[in-house]
Length: 452
Image 1 (cartoon, rainbow, N blue to C red):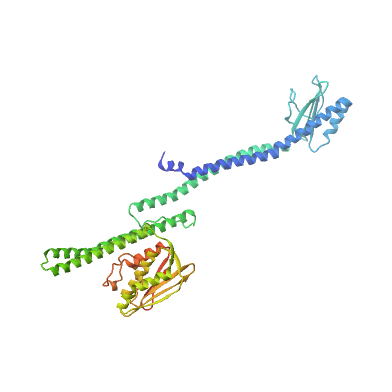
Image 2: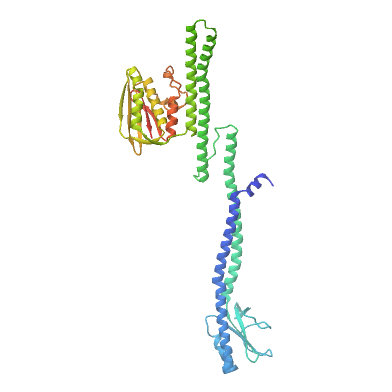
């Protein structure tokens, strides 16, 4: 058996289709059974009971009033009733005393029977089906009486033939539909599988084709395509980070190596001291880079052990401002604070303090001598909104998203001290708290808005 055929037989869709076919045919058979019971079997039982009652009454007439009375009763019966009446009265010696049945069985009728009772009139045949019962009279005479049930017999034939054809056609269509549905679903799944294999082979630009029908598979394909796009962005980001890490570490490592190499041959104590301090500074810079990268990675991967609890945001901002105030004053800068009292959010106090501290540090470094740092905080629905701004050169619109990447630095500020990890850490902390970080224009200067 070929692989596609084996896949069809193993298909869950096909198995569900077969189960559906079985349930459909079972329910159809049950429906026809109920219709047959109501339309055929019950009317036959009713007519059988009526004919038995008539046979008993006629036998009683024979016992009470004699044979002539019975013959008159049979003649009268033929002209009465909603259905055509049939009868046959056969003496013990086989002589027919009266009959309008064209034929009857030689042996006694057990229970009830259906007999052909077709009649010919004017060269035309009239179809009749007689439901008959037999009553043995006291002298052994056979009394056979019946009524026409041709209409019930027609329904019986219609039900039998119609139900057989309907079940066969329904089974064929249901099975064919199951195969068609399995094949259609299999094609859509194969498209997903082929795309996944090409992505695993390294082609991250592959996407699952959409048919534009808006069905469940299109929605699934669209969600998977969005996931693939995010994966491609993440891999590209990792590549950029790897390149940036190599670039950022190359300079301090080269300086550290040079300082240590010169330290081995330095002659004076002062020279050795200077080189040792430079080496320590470069080592501390490397340590700060690795610490920041590790912290960002732990936060983004969810491995940070957060102490999520109510945080007094108003007090936290006041503490952060107080911490950075001496450095701002040394640059001749002012910090203007407009923080609403009593702001409380759920979060990790240390991480939020780190984010605010990084933003204040950036505002101080890039805000320019004698500039102003603005800190605003207010309630926003069930959360809070923090805005930190400066009066420096600002961040061009094309860089406002990229500055959240590790090691990215705006070209105009590349000469400023720093690692390029501050805003990346802030973005990770805000995302960890399911908040939002926006970078805009303070006119002049830059502003960063954190929404928790």
